[in-house]
Image 1 (cartoon, rainbow, N blue to C red):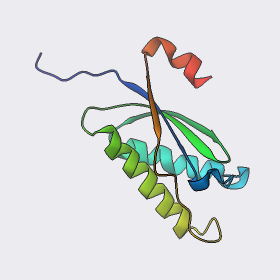
Image 2 (cartoon, rainbow, N blue to C red):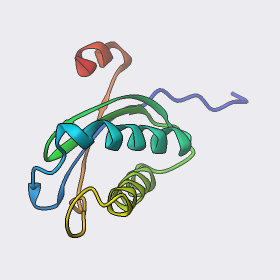
Image 3 (cartoon, helix red, strand yellow):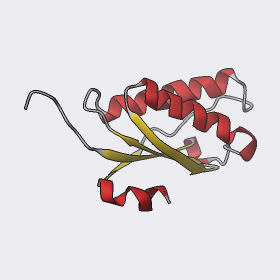
Length: 114
């Protein structure tokens, strides 16, 4: 096969350090837009994002060009930098160290998005 073809759908979940409920409605959209842009800029196909005050869920199609750990690192580092530079919180904002990543088939996407 002369070309590479992949179909890997990943739900990425990570939390605010200490599970502090910091992502309130007034800043949630700005953070989500920034993260979705980071996913797209890192050559991944962004599908959707959602979350709660203490964590985010990001669904994207994983391109084989980068490792999952590199994608996660880029999302977390760049978004925490943006949040801190925008002074959205008193003190320094951090994401937790770990993350969860779960793969889904194309047939499951509607349910995952819902």
